[in-house]
Length: 69
Image (cartoon, rainbow, N blue to C red; front, side, top):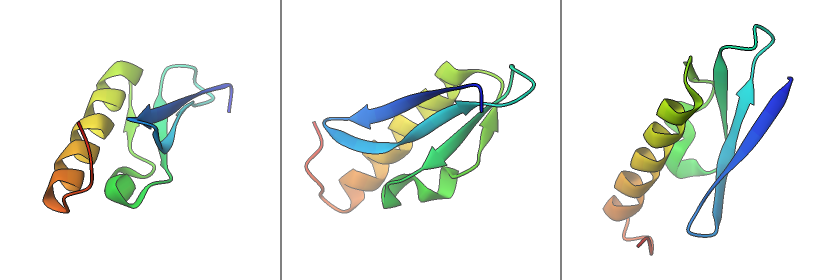
């Protein structure tokens, strides 16, 4: 791991984006159950991966009526 970025949504820590050894691929390490299906998902763009994680969190949270604004 060369670099990582925490993803926090509305005060909830959902995981980390990790820059892989090739310094181009990013991998998501999920810590919150709402985004568990994305655990170890790899993308060339960190922003695309972040957008996917946020969308998944908000969709899953809305299904279970978890307070998300």
